[in-house]
Image (cartoon, rainbow, N blue to C red; front, top):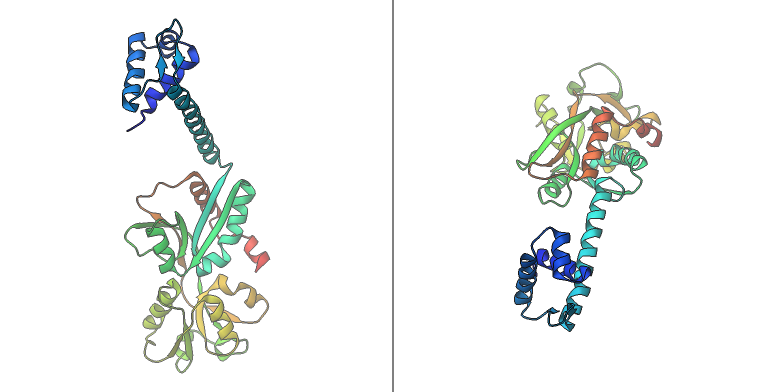
Amino acid sequence: MQLNLHRLGIFMTVVECGGFSAAASKLYLSQPSVSHQVRQLEQSLRTVLIDRSGSRIRLTPEGEVLLEYARRVFLLADEAVAAIRRVSGLQTGTLVVGGSTTVASHLLPPALAAFRDRYEGIEVGIFAGNAEQVEKRLVDGEIGVAVIAGEVRAPQLVGRPIMEDRLVLITPPGHPLASGPEPVQERLVGERFLLREPGSSTRAQQEELLERWGLAGDVRTTEIWGSETIKQSVAAGLGVSVVSEHCVEGESAQRLLSARPVASARPIVLAHRRDRLLGPAEQAFIELLQSMHTWPARLRAIS
């Protein structure tokens, strides 16, 4: 048994107008057409909804029940339209943005704060993980948009560069590599190099740098999960590493770590599924990021 909403609307109009003729006039239909639609509705429900025996129509008990539900159905439909308009107008809703570890920690908080300043009715959230984890969430449809350091790898995703980020060699203060002549790679032999975990875009670039420098087999490596753990490990003297410049802005300013550029800039990429229709909040956030061109100035104030 299926309920035809078009016929249900005609039935409601007949009841509200008090008859078939008045309903036909309001709906710009012929009276026979209106009568036929109501009869079809009755046949689909296998009951009589309107008593036509008198001079005026009367609802049967079954018709009374259907009328009550019909009013609720169309009221809910009106509420749905209003809710969609509110979301479209960015008055209410939720925006969850994914970010690779460094981006999620240092770019997204101030960027989302700026977004919420503009759209106070939108609740915001962040999913943080390494690039591989974030891309999986995008592919699975669990998040709609993400910001990742480096190029996207999943073929289902499209990514466009929006900003840049430099990699820096970090060492404890006073370490021989903290100063001295370039290039530093010649003095890395014998050092313990701390690598990010597999799946991290920084890990891929760390390995690429070691390969480019011809040091892939000449330095001892230790795997450390997470950029924060990498920083603490370097500060404790466990080794040296290469991370995003933004990852160590605070520690560098406070001279807890020394940082020196060692590689050209890498892109910060805005990513989403190729086949996903982005919502109004996601589109507005993308426009905000594209207008920034560089990492938010508020970043330095909170580092």
